Image 1 (cartoon, rainbow, N blue to C red):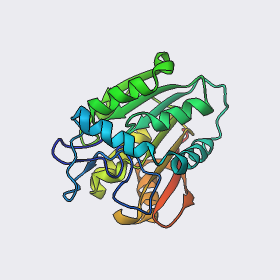
Image 2 (image 1 turned 135 degrees about the vertical axis):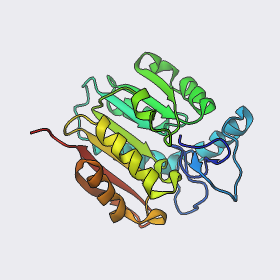
Image 3 (image 1 turned 180 degrees about the horizontal axis):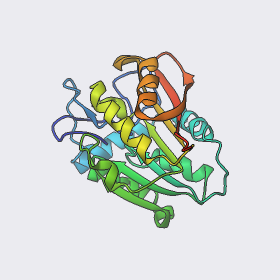
Length: 232
């Protein structure tokens, strides 16, 4: 999702899942910047395969939460939506987007080429509706490479891995620019360890998003829904 090569951490959220927090069982693969206590090699096919196998063991816990999040967009089921999955990993969130919106076209962004290759395999039946962009969220040009604007942007257990609030704020600003007016941004992430959910709500508002609110919160992980600002 968003890492420098030597800091890539899929334990928490590259669109990754958070394996470092036993109390957050919905995690995704973590391309975080810097879990020094748990080395990860997101460019290794063997490592990624083993990581995905472990992650899939959490599916019964995770899938209902992700499905709930996607439903929060409240968009027409049959609409031909342009969707961006930030930190897409092996495509778990995109799979749920396509389940809810079978005519959607999804761009999957991730830091790891290996993860994106697995997403390509995992979502092979929907290949004609997908595009894949390998990009680091700390690179300011990432938002230019994904296209847009989008009718929906989703992310799960990914952006917090940037750790630094200034870097996270820069990603929020890019996402705000990529949203169509009024389009939803759904972010399921670990906000508590990085300033708290109210801080992130404020950062999204400052980034240019509107109608930003807490949609679900268990005290550790949470879902924030925000929208692109409507033009006057």
